[in-house]
Length: 189
Image 1 (spheres, rainbow, N blue to C red):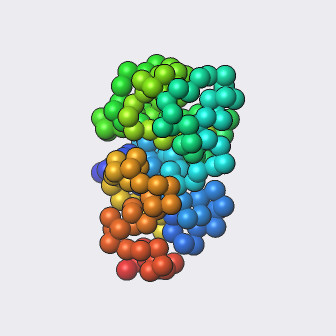
Image 2: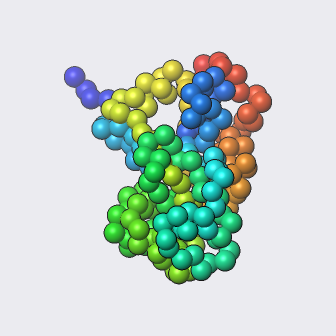
Image 3: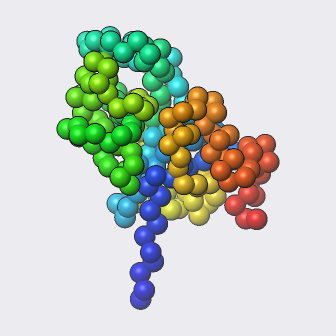
């Protein structure tokens, strides 16, 4: 029997369909960091929380000297490990614990990146989240089959240069649709 080609949505956006009832993911834009036969992992990139980088650094007793980053919002990255920081960034750099995403973007969980950011030596593009989104083996494929998500190749411009509010509409624009025009039948057209 021929095996089905493994779907790899790493470095893609997942756009929640309007029917998405899960409060964690309703109207969310998720960046897929890893996707393989074991499952998938992503970061929600359009959910800023009421915590700034300055406040986060104060909580972990780390100085933040980079003034331009003081007011940057920390994001809700997903419902898994919400007490843990995840830094989505480019360039990749060399940090202690970084997941390489298609050689384009890094997802780092080690403290050394935050120390570098605090000293103004961090990557020039970054998004800091608490938590991530995880899917067990076959779960994301199942949700895609149920039309829970639209997918589109990710754009660094959307991730790092647009505001949180602009990211979902911009990702939809890559597909040539706007949120208002999506219906529950969108995946069946």
